[in-house]
Image (cartoon, rainbow, N blue to C red; front, side, top):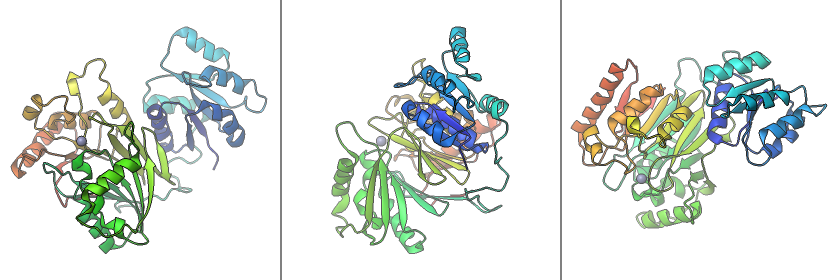
Length: 412
Ligand SMILES: [Zn+2]
């Protein structure tokens, strides 16, 4: 199937968002971030429409537009220019160079879909039509199984496993990795997994060297994580493994592949998209958004949301909100009760109401409150759930909410 829309944007968040909106609507879209590659791609793929960002490093959007519109073979391609610069002179210039439309940034899904529909009509394969390639979950069957391994402790945080499209994804490497890996070997459904690390604070990698999957001959593990400035992922992993390895000194027999990840959007397996984003937390910390089988799961265990107190320069909530909007499941840092967060601002962790408000603002479908402070007991966890549920009630949002607990399982 040929590409219908080529998105050219150097900003992975904006580009990734357009990509998601269009593919969800059924368009075959492709995202390129390097404007120098566009002309070559256009010759190969002949898309109907190019969504073109104006301000890009390298070849800028207007120059590219001019190249497309003065090329005999390419000039029939429709071009919509996308820009945050909305001076009328800027719009006129794009139109003079031959753009068919101008879309103002930031835009929402409705605006984008309307413009794209006006320019090229509906997608060749609208959703609901028989899928041509992507396997769709069968009616009624759960597409995703999410499990939590371990509890929050002073020096440990839980591990998350996500099974979707016959693939296994494991997030973080607290000591919960031991029961998680053991169960996965017993259940014997997988021969490979992605193991995604958010950051290298000790509570998140304390079980790094203990993963039973590391010892499994014939198992292949792709380990992804951020790169700290001045270090490498390999280095950080080696150090983390060393610190915990002595408790289980059996040799590593699994095949390992390392992937340094940054804020970007990767199709890591056909029809499975991973979008890491930088989380508001000390050190280089990633959150992960996973899109597969029509489900969007967001895991962001350590991050501070600014909430209503954000200053004009603190656009973090807005930026991540735009990215994860409508997620089927948001698993997010909610370490502190609202009262306890008051004296712990700017330490990189969120409050229960901050996280619940963020979930409601961005219309997520389910919420898991992660990383409750180790000083809280079961009674407080239940109180946090009740506080979040009350906030949703008040806002008329129907969002089931759970505090993260060892053994918790969710299928949807
Ligand atoms: Zn941390």
